[in-house]
Amino acid sequence: MMSTATMILQDLGISEQGALRSFALLNASQKLAEFKQECVAFQSKYRTTFSAFEKKIKAQPEENFGEEEDFMAWKFAEEGVAYWREKVERLKLEA
Image 1 (cartoon, helix red, strand yellow):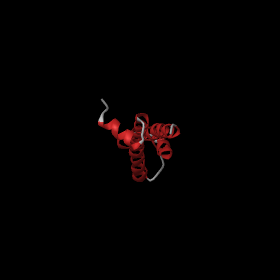
Image 2: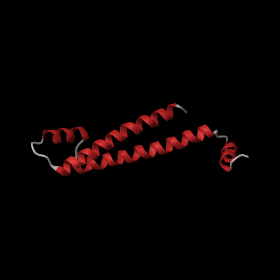
Image 3: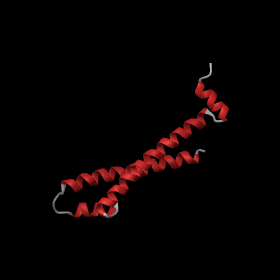
Image 4: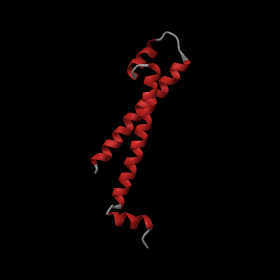
């Protein structure tokens, strides 16, 4: 017995693999957008790029815990952008 979802995909001319790829691309693109938004928020807050902020943090003689915390969160967001950008690009190539 065929599921309703499978029948709908069949009616639309979309394979289950194609639907899975589209779903993955949609979700990966959403994650990428979320991490990009977080990076933009930090760029706006500190009025600088991540690399310039990183240099500032590493050059400070004393720790500023608020900035250190933001640095770690920003670094995670930058890594998230790189990770999800690569996944989105790979999914687009598989089309």
